[in-house]
Length: 168
Image 1 (cartoon, rainbow, N blue to C red):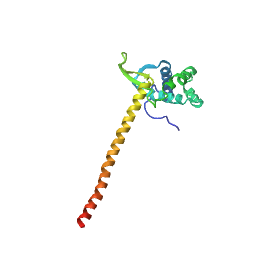
Image 2 (spheres, rainbow, N blue to C red):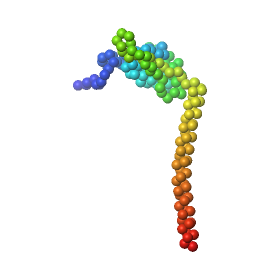
Image 3 (tube, rainbow, N blue to C red):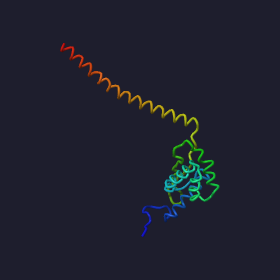
Image 4 (cartoon, helix red, strand yellow):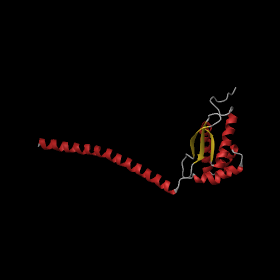
């Protein structure tokens, strides 16, 4: 007999949690930022990022996969035509969670989850420059590691030459 997966769920059953997260994702894509509890925001982040990653691929198969969960065609259209192109060069991390304190009524910890802005040209150039600097530092470190090894190898023939001169 099949048993449901163990573990904490938001709002009760697994089906209810899935619907809750999809509805939160719809609101996030529609408004760009939403206020919810920290627990819901943490559970929403991977769901929303998976939808954006599928939208970045942009083919009909991924559009249909997203439409299985988000049934509102206008939100899916927005996701594929406006949101996904913003993150074309970003390899993940499309959302940001910011804690905003506790809710007044029940003291529940609240957070704002929002879509981060796309990388500007200046930010991309800065990122590429930092990556190039890191690569250069690694290459210098490798060259320094190789240089002492070569010096030791060069020292051996010099020692052998010194021994030959002593023998002569």
